[in-house]
Length: 155
Figure (tube, rainbow, N blue to C red):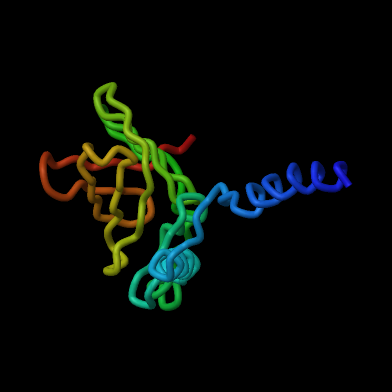
């Protein structure tokens, strides 16, 4: 009988302690659960219809509304345009490299909605955008600032 009392005296406090032990993390309150649900829903929600999302990897130089009505050929227009101080390399993937007097700028280019101007948007937001009017297939004329005319290199 002594063994039964001794075992009961030892086991009862052990069971009481383990039964009252707290979890490592407290249960979430209803407000926290609702906030977490709203955060995950907003992270998965698509952008509003009036916002156009363009990833850098899939940049298209011709906006979709212009591409549907224009015969602008991005691959044919890609190339190198230059004058004595400036060299502009345009790719068919929508990127550019502009070298002006030894200063090099890279970024993306887009055909503007009028179908006559190119907008160069530098990667660095501290650099200014550049605009060029397309004069035929082989010539670009700067808009604003110093007037320069870049002609297509034959090489």
